Image 1 (cartoon, rainbow, N blue to C red):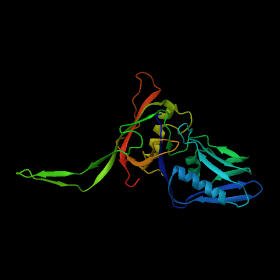
Image 2 (tube, rainbow, N blue to C red):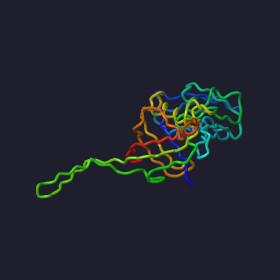
Image 3 (cartoon, one colour):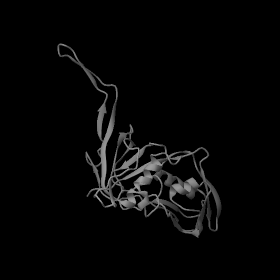
Image 4 (cartoon, one colour):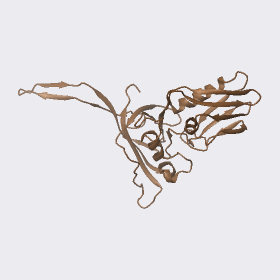
Length: 257
């Protein structure tokens, strides 16, 4: 069965970090900070989970999870096994990245974001790759050759790179393709590209590294710098029907990934 896969960007937490507070019923209120640095979004979730679990040794267990699988919604859920809790976002960028609209209150055992987590795009149709799933792409070199009058050939190669020639989702639905069609805020490719590639948000590097998961549930992934797109323009998959759109990416693999 063809997989949909997913795209996941890296989040840069600025100097000073992102601060938030958790209030755990019957135990107390604790100030926490996500340290400055660059995080894959899924790593950011595990970092927040670790901070919550380290706030007090007297409570149960926190879980911070994203619905980022093949049938995922893109929403983040924060839950606790025993005590009810609340969270106050002192840095709203962290709130926004996780897809929450405000502070998590009144106290509850579970909170789920109302918006799509920023940094992840989940297509809703099968992926097609020129070389097949999990193949990172072909190799390009700067190979040059000279030929003498006698037919002797001299070849020089200084560097090479891996090119992802084409990954295409042929019929992405309007909510997952266009901002104007979104059902969940932030779920469209258009919004993902503007935020994570187009420089609209300070915590995503313009043209930054992108992890391509060939299977959104599990399996192999490779990291790329995407090229060839400077607009969110899309053609219709079916002429005169504004609902399905083909989306295609290409780029160069980040060495060592």
